[in-house]
Image (cartoon, rainbow, N blue to C red; front, top):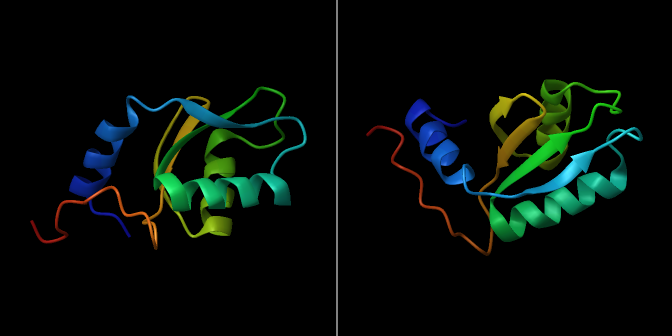
Length: 100
């Protein structure tokens, strides 16, 4: 679970990220989950977008994908959302301490 300071840190880092996945009319499927899972392991922080044709809202998609991949939802703004999961092998992001 992320603290407010950690969430703020990740939001700042996410500003410069490109959107790399889109949830479209087919919704969330196993292939998308697998790709997101692999990308989170490699990058830790990713930005996704929900298209108007998607059966899920941005919040629903963010929550579902986060649950399936063990990630944290950093933020949901409009059609975009940001996910974070600490990498097991490729740690790139050093989060601020939980108590400070």
